Length: 286
Image (cartoon, rainbow, N blue to C red; front, side, top):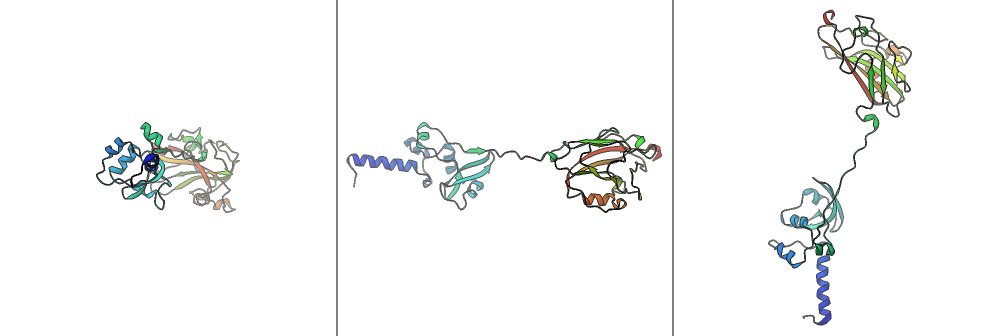
């Protein structure tokens, strides 16, 4: 029956508004002329939506974002622009996360709805782990310099003065080791020092009143063992200061605290470490 009069006029308007405001409409059948839809004033989505509906299936991430959801539910997925926040919508044969449909006011003005792009906040790193904040320095030389002879076996064999800054929060004490890598590839310890107070900011040259000396690699030497490399060429010596979150569990006898023992004891309580690399070449004496 054909509606007539004022009732029929209002009923026709109601039907048009219902179609325009629908949250999830059935997809257009293949061959639908989108230009005809636009011309008739019944466009229900943005240009980006129409492109998604006609140019192929939505991205897999958009489909996965609506898994277990229904039309109109909120959804998110990551694309090249960042995190897309939108709603689940019916695409050709599948439910996918797509930009929200334009409202009636936006359709009338031709304004398109763009997807909301959420830029993930930067990851905050603990200050102790940011490169360069915990630094070990020495008057004997800067990182990569040559260690002067006065700190070697050919002269006085003095232990170099060291200082540090940028102590990590939560540091309970420090440990210090000086190591070198001989030709055979093994690690040798020239200096093992532990139980250095957290309040310390340095060690004086030939300092012996701070921390407890352990045993180096050359016999039971509980002291700074000055570099005395054999063979030609410069050898690398690394001073490493460890900031510890607790006091390491070590043998009561310092003679039993070797480089490997101390390294193992602090492996799970090290907040950060600072390194200073110095080379030494004995020349013709080596």
